[in-house]
Length: 523
Image (cartoon, rainbow, N blue to C red; front, side, top):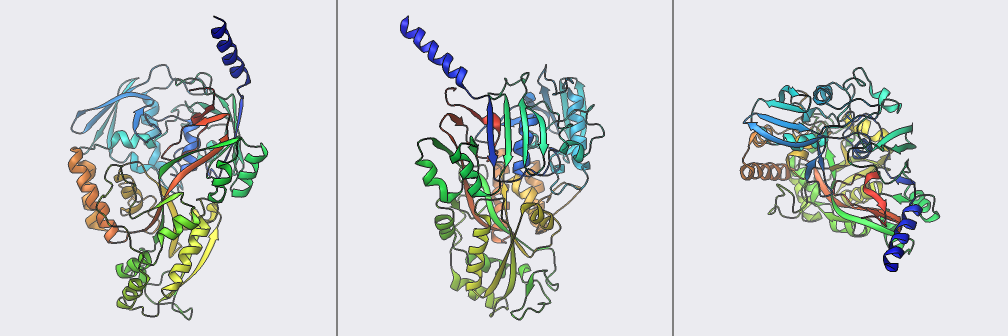
């Protein structure tokens, strides 16, 4: 009895001492609180704190119930979703099927969206509201990916958001969802202050308040954690991993993720057109776009020593990549050979393509978005220069970079993509021909286009047999790799650091969310 009383007292003391405020710092800026404006991981992470989706994902990116408790195909072209009863938005409005229908109708109509969510509603031809808690989606053809698509769509309130603009969400006042946290204040590019939604259907969050800060300087994030000003940081600088791992006050949370860092290339300009940042060795326009020649693209890829980048620049916190998805994910191409580092072979390919003396190119990169992004670009530039492609690197803040990339202003650029664990996700968004009608290619900033690949993707998206669909997606990804649609570099390991008094559920999708952090005394 005495032992039981002592345990109860200890548990009570721990609960009493549990912090009520969590101060987090993220390494990438959140550009909008509009959950449908920009497919961007930092935005999605914050959206997940405010809004909910019909289908959620666990830490391994597997589908789990969200605002929908169950879903099933009730016909070859009809999906039915049963909605969770008793859910309310932060302003008290009741969640119903009307909100789902309204949300899906909004996706393709968000003005100036730099990376639209429209692809996730385009397959739906008709929405049928059966009753307030039952909704059916009718598609033109069999569409097995609809539940997966719903993991990307945050639901908003039809009544509150009837005429809302992106600016209205960004003000914070209209960032109203059904999620675990409410927005108290939004200072764009600086911080978001949250308070917990005590009535959250999934259970009240562990922290009363969350201060979600955007600190893009790596050294400042680490210094804030070490000084005790911050409780939790993401994008741990690779140079600080060992130091933080050995600090008894702290610990790390890590997992191999789904984020590919890659190089996008200019496929928009025709072979006989000038690419904006490519010249001959004397700085004169070439009169042609060498990046439209697969031999040049292959040479640029072969010139990159991925082992050196992952070992020396990433300090082992990344895995060399030859495709979008890591082993173990659906439609990973298991027999695709690694991209061999072969500078001599790269020079031979350039000569064969008509560039024995190379040319000049500018490689653009963000300097505050991905782990070591500018350093990686500098390393790639040096490797390209060694094969005769004299490379200058221009690094910019993410806000400037991504807008210019979205306007296809670059010849070559470094960027990342965090996939769902299904090959259709990067193929639809990054590789497929840009099409407003289909909602494809929303993040295809190089404007790669391959009609044969698109045709196979159409087949895969309508294939209900999982085995056949996976084989199609493997063929599509192999085709993209052989054509060097983009140049893959590495897949990041996701690493967070925190006070030892905290625990964290590491996510393969790298989203940094307050609901995944809890006091270490809790399980």
